Length: 124
Image (cartoon, rainbow, N blue to C red; front, side):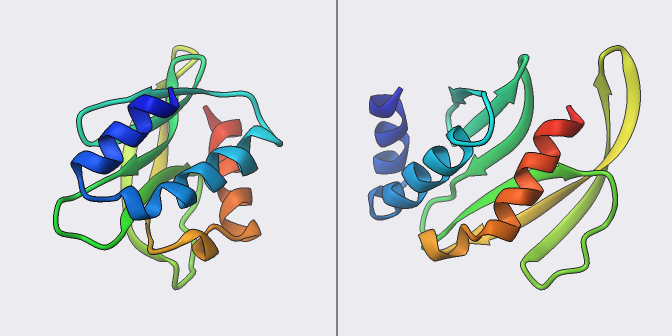
């Protein structure tokens, strides 16, 4: 899996942020059990095949973004975008808010953000 992650980071010129992704994986691994799926331009963190966190990459950007679910709007300067989305969890349609944050370095991966991600994990 690490090889696939490094490949996508290199493809998008993000080999300099691989430590941040590694830090994110390590912090989450100590709290929750999840799978990782590497796609063309993103890394999806899943619970029972349902995505609860996405790390997305864009060419020519010095950062990557993460998106996670919340059951309510989060009023914080870290959140750069929110979008309501219907998802099906255990055959029930639920409306969640997708929150987007830009991650510039591993310092951005603070405890508040990890708690939001774990809450997203618990929602799916």
